[in-house]
Length: 253
Image 1 (cartoon, rainbow, N blue to C red):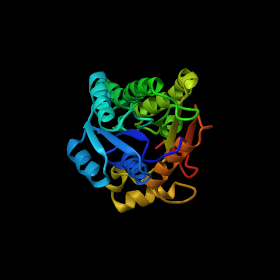
Image 2: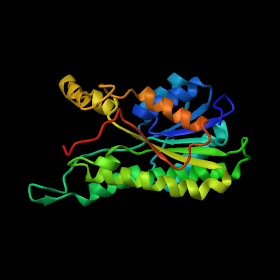
Image 3: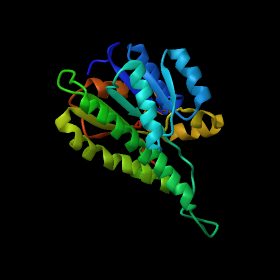
């Protein structure tokens, strides 16, 4: 699918981090972009900076997503690109100091990262399926998994389970939507220089980078965005999870 001023996109978690990089890259190519995020203050400021629109959205709530997509479509037409970057990553061990992992915390991580991604993707895909095809396809959905889906570390039971769910979701969703010309892919990033990481001390950042074989540095969010745009433009990419990690394999801790 060609990315230009005739294409509309929605990006969840687009107010910061990987999502913001995707928003900026899409806008640089002329696409109309709606940012769906819970952070209204940051989201509205960033939307003005890049010429996007903003919809305050709770990805775990079906009504909130339906309202946000409806407003976005009213402003810029049916989205043909949906990129799910919204997510949370609290750390907690299965048992810590004799206490079991807080169940509500586990459920919250699954609900935001996995259920939220499915909620947005399924509603977005319903709109794509009803739209006229653009050449041989109608739309593209890109999920954000993580290399923790495959090598979750200590304290990442909830996060790894949520991202493993994204990895497992991608192929069957692609198969569900294949006859309607909607592709579904996922990117599994390694350790990237997002605000969550860059807010750490330089010593910690250097330690994280030292564990990446090559290039031995944190991933640049622009590299994640570049891969997302390539997925949109390469019509034969479908139903797969692509690792973007500099050959990183996470250790137990």
